[in-house]
Length: 111
Image (cartoon, rainbow, N blue to C red; front, top):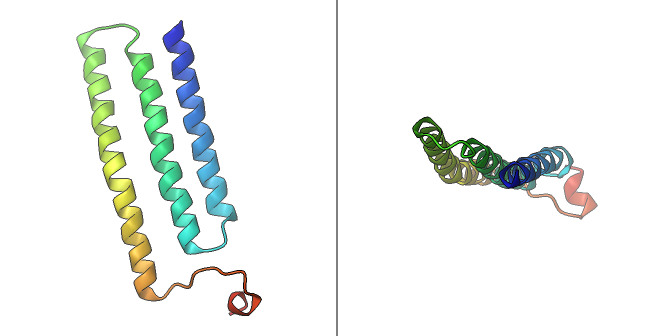
């Protein structure tokens, strides 16, 4: 019963982070802040969702369930290492191509 509650909490929190990242992608003004929302929201939400699913899977201990949890662990490690790296690479490419940062100055934003 306690593992169910913790699993539901982790999965729900992960979904909230995912929705927050999606809203950030839609609402933020420029490329750099949108990439920040996408990178952070995606990484954190996937970690929380996979942790909740792993805890749910561990309710019935068996070799098959431990293998599934191990695979989820490898997926989590893969996502936590590749998502920030790809976000950094995309932001660096945008910077090198001359994508301008958003400022509050109206003169810069009208271009």
